[in-house]
Length: 172
Image (cartoon, rainbow, N blue to C red; front, side, top):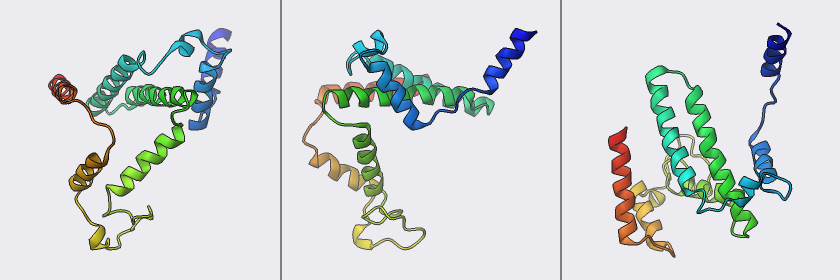
């Protein structure tokens, strides 16, 4: 009986971790004194893990839609988030970019692609009418961004990626 009470006590008193705690945990796992497996990982070695976690996140969402129980979805989204933080940590170690750079870039993109919601400086419109000169469709903005990119995906790989998406859609 004491063991069961101790287990329940531990369960109730688990620490509540924040996003910053997750960043620290991933840094520690990759540190010299961290986990040998995590230290060996590269962007390439984690590619399949990223795909698997994305697929499991989609499964978690589908399970939630069927059961109204969010537990699996929460767990799988956490696993996917861990992949993003891990890749950003590796990139930071390689001097490429930081997690803050990733967050900044996606925030800029969301503001830029939603001129009906935000001013150009990111200030929410809160129901005010947007400046008609800034109002382009999401698709127009996305196409303009793609034209300005300094990198491009090969036509073959783009075709394969789209095929993979179709396969995933059929699986769901």
